[in-house]
Length: 426
Image 1 (tube, rainbow, N blue to C red):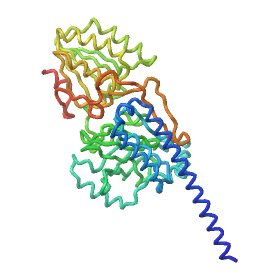
Image 2 (cartoon, rainbow, N blue to C red; image 1 turned 180 degrees about the vertical axis):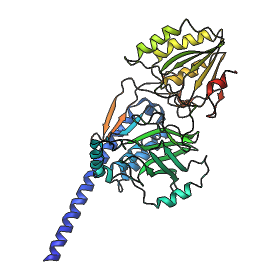
Image 3 (tube, helix red, strand yellow; image 1 turned 90 degrees about the horizontal axis):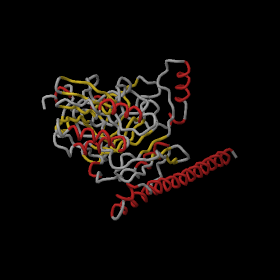
């Protein structure tokens, strides 16, 4: 009788587990279909995914539909869904897990309670974890060359991550070796990189504060860092780096004024154009700055700083472009760009390069240039667990060759010293 009872309990559990897995499978397929439909409506999909590319994309889609055996967690789903983004060159297109809202530290009683609740939550229990001997892994990674993609990375003072290549794949796994943030645990995965070509990756990051998963379509290893691994609502200008506490001559702090004018010396002036935003709160600021400088640019040389200009709208950029084009007829212009120069600022840079007496200095721009979003529309996937940021703008120009790659400067600069003194000798 006891054996029969145990058998029936086991059978009931098996049937329940099987039914639960079938239901999850149905939900996954419905969400995958919804994501496919969502992406297929974007201008980037319509322009790029056709002919053989469409056949290959549909083959990938069918593979993802049948590859459901190991889908157990939200992370598993996110990884599968992300693969539908990989073939599309559109770095304005976004995909992320909705914020989990984990506390940043446990310095207050409220945060301590919040972290304790998170630690006991299903989200934390399901969080991807690597089952390796971490001390041994760290010893191996410490032997890697400083300019090797594998090795030890730091996210400011908060995370120490070991990045290693997964055997027989194009994947690199980043595992937490040490953390000062209570929401993280040693052994948890902070990133997965998928190498597309040497030192260029599609990346899935866990936000360093909230731990929600985010797809980064265009990651690169440059300057001993994963240069695009900056996060909103985290540490200012911090990215995953191999060397800590080096002075950063490449980037401008997000706390610096977006628009700035100064005279560098008797023969050179400087302006910073930090954005071309068309948002209501930003347009009066850029217009005021334009009005202040339009009749004041009279030096022999003008430095135009476009570093960390995240773009905006052509209608805002146009008046500055006309002003600088006019100046270039009588004086020379040195333009500064970096990986934070993106979108409309990259188009602005290309337009400036058409003029004589204008030379671009710095580093390759972001390569997020071709498409964009007029309305910032988002589409929920998987019952609202994930969000797609949809692009709807058709490019006004042939910019696809710059997508992922970026705009190259005429003269490359390094992080060895301040850029402005270097270019004043031009």
